[in-house]
Image (cartoon, rainbow, N blue to C red):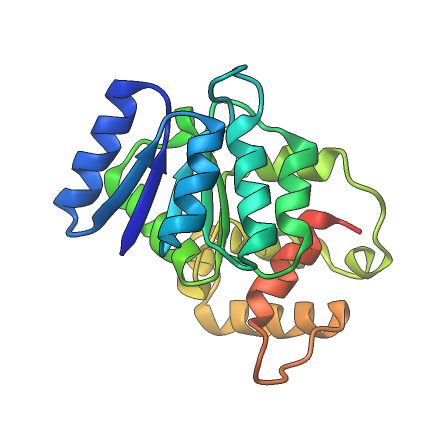
Length: 215
């Protein structure tokens, strides 16, 4: 994959570059400020980008705003936000266009290189990779959704794990259910959310985005 890394802390930025290259990927550019981030995202058009939220010049939300701006100009540009903070408003805005290719992880939750690279690959493929803590924050501030209210408790569990990016097999292992049982739950979820298979949309991504947007 061609990857952009936007992170102002040298040790973390250099560590991610070395890690990604060790896995056979190419880091085509790095950025240390919000404006630099937007520039390299638009010029490089990477397969996926890792972007911190708080970057110079003000150390507020420059990285996330740069990611949003880039996604507006390049719809579906895959972005994995890696931050110490959950910015709920901007996270929802990232999810709102419904195109997928979005991840949001807290730095403190990344314990394994394979996990991190796997999340990047899912995002690059148009899927989602969401930290459970981010999911919890988004849902705690969401509004009521009548379609979501139709889901059973088990279906909510399945959809929450799907939002983390887990496959049916992995969801089944987490919930101690067979893969066929999870497949039946996902089919029911798609039906209750009104998500049809038209051959163009990824139903898992659409279901996850409905769940996370909670609107």
